[in-house]
Length: 83
Image (tube, rainbow, N blue to C red; front, top):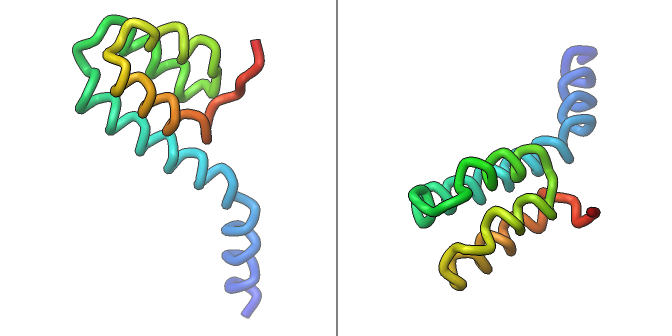
């Protein structure tokens, strides 16, 4: 019984981080498939996993519009919009 409570508490504690990591992975898989050879891909990936939105947007600016916009939508859940 005590073990179950510890597991449930750990799950609740890490829930937000787990959701963010999952959203980052979804965005990364999309980016890798659709823009893996685009300029700024590696830098955009670093910005995505660092949670830094301005750098992510800057590095993806030259990508095809539909790919860039979808990547931005996916990343919006995981990056900060601050400067």
